[in-house]
Image (tube, rainbow, N blue to C red):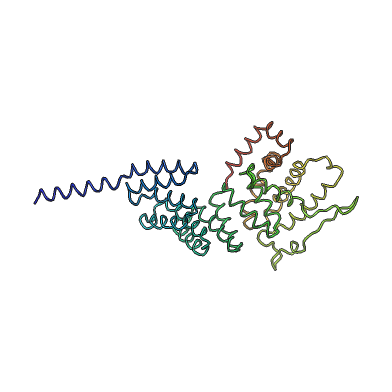
Length: 352
């Protein structure tokens, strides 16, 4: 009887050892990640499958396999992996990224309602994970629900101030709503983080257009400034400014933009014009901050106010124009490495 029990125990132990080799599985996952990073997705999935043969429900293998399948547009298979990971690893921290992949896969299937449900489930478990809010925001854009999408992007940058894509989302939404100053602030923050990418070039174009204000040369010696009447009545019944009221800033930016046509500033380069006007805008923010509130006043304005106080607006201007294909900008950036380093150190160390 004892001999039979011993054989049975050894058999069970042997089976466990052979079927649950976590260390060996994670080594294979590492090899799979290398293949994924090189774009060799089939080879990556093969490694993950071998890892799962060693350790049936290995969370890392399931998470990475799900992501690679997502990259291959194999959405149904990706969803299956995500569901297996969630079912077998309740509340494990690594599941925060699994919920992102899970939601993305439903988005890929054009099942946006399901993707929103997945992100909401993930947010309940991981309320401090910015990627869940960002990806939910993207799904909401697909549904043309811009107000809630904006809230998601705002939450994402509050959790991770250095997430350029969320600033990009904020900028494009408010720009589409013709909220000029909020859009300028969000575009500028994006460019402080990501000044040289393709979308940086696109955002710089949007920013330059916004910085023109509403000043337009209408004659040889005349400039017309158009003020939107909607911005002048942006107050509550008791006369206080509504949240994120930038009417004064828009008016003064337009007045400053009118100076672009003055012969005194005729020789200014495009980046010098931007620096002059952005300095003025930062001064307006500083002077008006105490009487205003709202996300853009509370989150973005202090960053740019401090930027001016630290005499870093000029450096920021050249960084923001890095994609402008301008020889003078390229020359300045090459010759002012110390100033750029000072700006980056300040920006990275800024307390949000």
